Image (tube, rainbow, N blue to C red; front, side, top):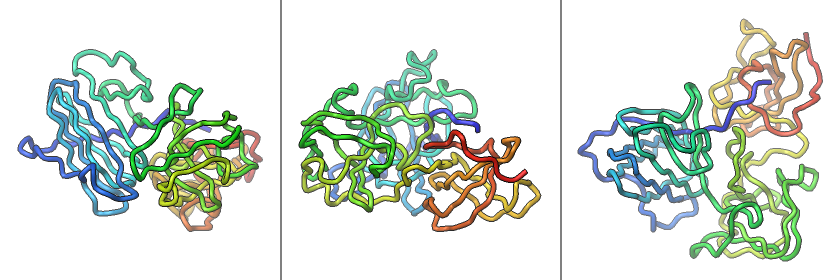
Length: 320
């Protein structure tokens, strides 16, 4: 199965030069789903970003003068993003579910840390053709390259009471991500329906998106601040299942044949369980039931479109 490299979703669109005020939310506004996007412009030219929500009517037009830094408050969600900088543009998608920091580097020359999206930079000539890159930052685990600390008023802060085991999914049957000692402090960004707290570990992740980027703290394993009780409860993947996380619209066919009926279209941010593959490996059977679409369709996707997460090796051969 083909695996995709880490995703950035920098989207660039030319915004008229007279539009000098970003139509983003006030960073001091209250709201459980408002996150800060901090943009530093080192490019020497004005930078424009446009975010258009894929599931709502929200739209933001962000303008950052050369040599300056701006912070914008943006509602959580998945956006079609367009970025215009250095006389060129790039398009893609951007998922906002925690604070983001984007640093635009000087226009001339290659990015000094090309291909390293976790180093908090954007250089429009950095990404290989056809690929998208995702730049994100957040609280890192103590002992894993970062430090915790007290968050802003109203934020969610978790502190481990004793040694704590962190899991890749919110289940004791899931793969163990890390074991940390007492006093570990992180800032969760979501909750699962069964009471686990999810946080982004701030490490490079190959093409994981949405809830698959999170690592999970068991209920009762640490002390939490009151802000944790207002975290959004999100859909989470089940332990022990292989999932497909398509990075673009993907047809689900009735059979492993492009001429067969299309039963469903998976969009970015929609997930399905992978059941197995054909003998030649060109097609993969998926079950939407354990995913987040609300559908229970079982069908086939081309293997070249898949982007998988979980225990995906050794899947059975199904069909021809």
